[in-house]
Length: 232
Image (cartoon, rainbow, N blue to C red; front, top):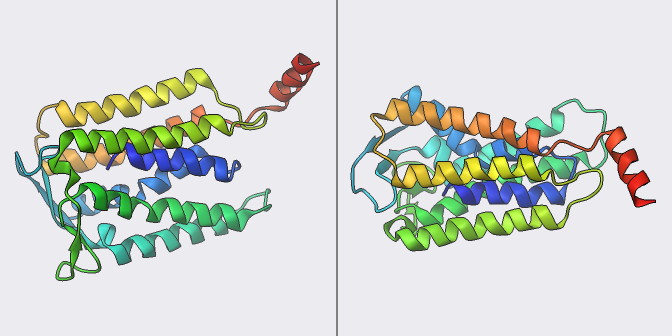
């Protein structure tokens, strides 16, 4: 899944407003970020097989470190611990924010189970593997992606606040980038090789996270004062 992961990040942002949307974007895609790194290091493996599924040509045959159930649980704990230990001046409900970071990481796995072929291991490559195979049904895949993404975005829009406003122009740019990348990946040409896939995966996740942080910037004191004057 692609868009759905970002839908989760949008929704969790409103569960704990002090969490940066950029942080949640990285958390929601941490398993894919690690996968890209591990592919470059040859610790995990995939290959390009045209027609492997109706949606993606990638065949994932060795990635238990990043995409096993146990791996997802372990990385979610690591991410939550790292966030909790990060120095911050605002310690209010910090443990809740850390827990949501961990949740964003872990939810990547069940969302992937919906679309992947049965290639997501429980533990190692020799363990049972999960996957409902929605990628073999392009329309159903697109509906699922857009539904989860749309619901998350709707929560983000509905639960706005004065201190954490919706910046319509910036948000529109972010959404256009996400949708454009999704449709380009589905309908675009085959990638040349796995190195290109891994590098683009890492680069995109980091760039779009920075874009999300920019789009979700907290209201400044001046902006809050302007809102107060407008209201009166």
